[in-house]
Image (tube, rainbow, N blue to C red; front, side, top):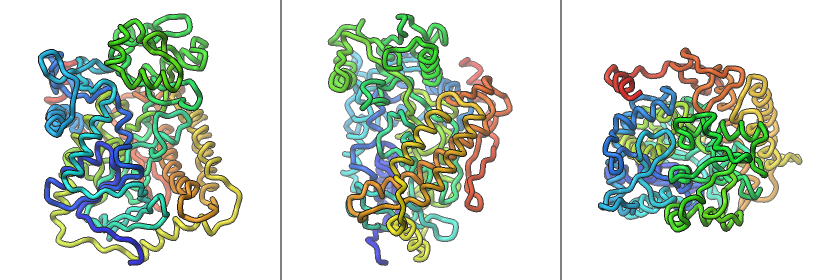
Length: 571
């Protein structure tokens, strides 16, 4: 071949918590594994999950159990979750926490030396194991060290833009080094997608530049099914000021430690929306409540509300929430031990993604596996805080096992189609051959504005149709984008590739939102404000048919009777 080529039994695309855990598992099975990171190792979006990792350890509340955790997860997801994923997650999370501890993770402790756990929205008991408000960072540090010492090969600052198939099964992938623009080919027996979400489709987001929905788009283009794409979680508390950091995450741990939400009339407004759970209501509820307060004129000076932790002792705040203290002090000149923070909703997490088998992480394409935020099913209509981190390690491990077992059964590497390879490379180079003055940054800006205003926290048919029409217009404009210069150090060229993924994800979200004519979890339709029992039994499925996006529905997997009884008992 004319390209730099690498061979691995399993290729993991994404170096966050899910990808690293999958790679560690593949390596433990004695197979060769490569990990591709779009950015630098250690800079994964997992580090933004600050407040804690959910697991029914029962260290603080002895009554906690996997059954209660399962029930809370299903209730939070409005019973649209894949029940088997929710069950495995609740049952296996404690073992994955102990495993992280064995590998060197240092959690905060109770006075008698157990792992400390804090309260979080939607969880019945104090369930979140944490390291101050830097839990995700500690997990990445631990998994990264474990992975490196396991002998995994890491390819940093490399973007994959096409999955390659031999017949109907996965055969490899092609990408490029972000520094030089040189193409790289991977021959592999199985691929694990662990690419995270696509928050950069929105104007106000907690997500960093890497989160452009690459895995969703790669899977879709390869023929895999996506489910639940209409459910996009807006975290209730992102920074709203100053403008340069708008959307930056303010951990739910602030509310978990006793932070109070107030409006400009100094009212604890959650009394109006969820008087039982108040600030610890589910994220969809708190986000909509904040949005409503601001829209009705009760917001803070910069278009948010106030989150106040200053009633606690200053030393306790600095100990429990060190990152938040420094974040506000350095970026907003606000001392959170003395004055309230201004916060508002920010696009944060995708519940929708690749449809996978609960046991193995296998997609509907042979040889393609997925785990973490790029998958759908686990969280249903709305994810509970802290469940993402335990999701990463539970299903990262399972996807790694599934991919390793699949790869082991193949006697030889699938064949790469030279024609398909050349076409993929040519498609990526085409923008350099075009002429025109269309700007990729302008298209990205228009997409973000459109998604924010038309496919945001509250939705209605008229807006969604406008949003879909706008996405269609932007797709046509993006297909004609011209790029100047060379492939070396060319961020404009990188964005052209990212836009393809962002437009695919945005089109899927908007079309799925139009299809679901009800309000459920993170999906709120003004024109259909109530839950509809019919839609409560259906997943919206996005797939590619004859080059076009196809939207259909399929029944939610039927839950066994014993789990139905369990849910009834935990009402």
